Image 1: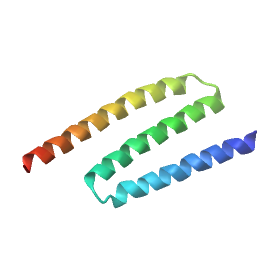
Image 2 (image 1 turned 180 degrees about the horizontal axis):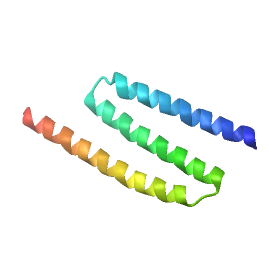
Image 3 (image 1 turned 45 degrees about the horizontal axis):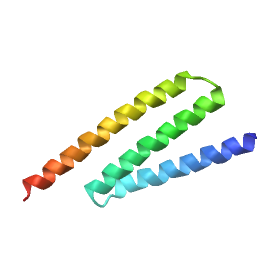
Image 4 (image 1 turned 180 degrees about the vertical axis):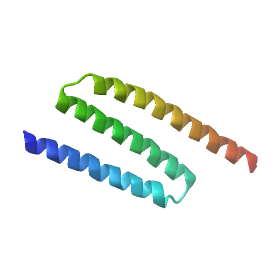
Length: 89
C-alpha cells in the first residue's frame, strides 16, 4: 500500500504545481482568486492525507481551522473584486 501513498502525494503535488502556475499566469484577477481557493483546498487535502498517514487527529483540527480561514480569505477577495467592479460603472 505504500506505493499508493506515493501516487496520492504525487498527484496532490502535481495539482499544487498547476494551481501555482495558474496563480502566477492569471490572466485575470478573478482567475487568480479561483486559483488561490483551489490552492487552499489542495493544501487542506494534503493536511488531511498527512493526518491519515500519521493517524493523528491534531492534523484534522489544523485542516478545519485552515479551511475556515481559507473560506474567509475567499470571501474577502470576492468582496474586493465586487467593489472594484462597482467603482468602474
